[in-house]
Length: 237
Image (cartoon, rainbow, N blue to C red; front, side, top):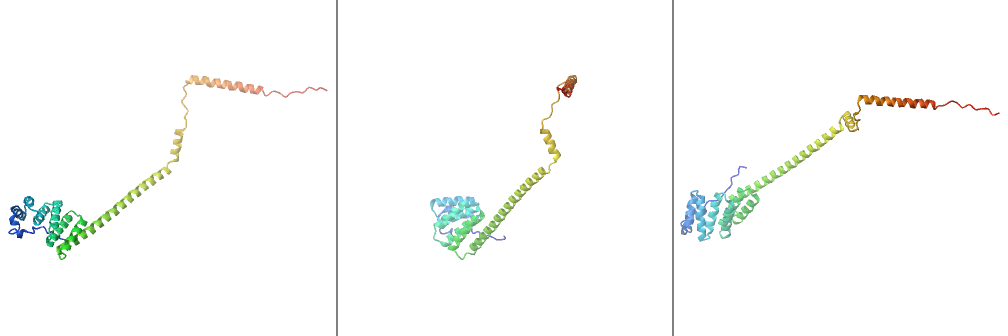
């Protein structure tokens, strides 16, 4: 979108190293290491300093060192602790601003929006926070539109898949309806009982056929004799 985020993560209290933090060597060393980009070493020094004193500035700077290492969960814990333990509205506003940035990095737009709004309660004039809030809101809207488009795309694909399935079933049915009638007849013939081949030899078959013919001849002759002649009546007068 061409927007540039205002990520306020510089060591807020480096200017005070000769006053408040000069009393703690570990906090002092942590600030020097952080300024030189040695974030892991700075983290260790800040943690040693916090074992002695729960200093809100050191907690904030520890959060910055975690942020630079992309350890956003731990960064948030330290920013939250720093904002909770101070009455300094400026520190609280910047801590909340940076918490919003950690959620921007994770594309958790709702959380980012929430913390930018909290930051603006303590510093309503911050142009950087207003800008980042608008950015988070725009990204949320953009994500919602993408999700909606993807949902519509998935639904359209499901419809296409179902239409294709329905058409395939329709085509299969039409193929069955247009099946060759001769093929159906052949299928029926296959299912009918078929005469089994004779187990008789040709000689036995001829003898059996001759016997049948002789029997039919006898029956025919007997039938002819059975027809009889007209009965002549004798006169009795």
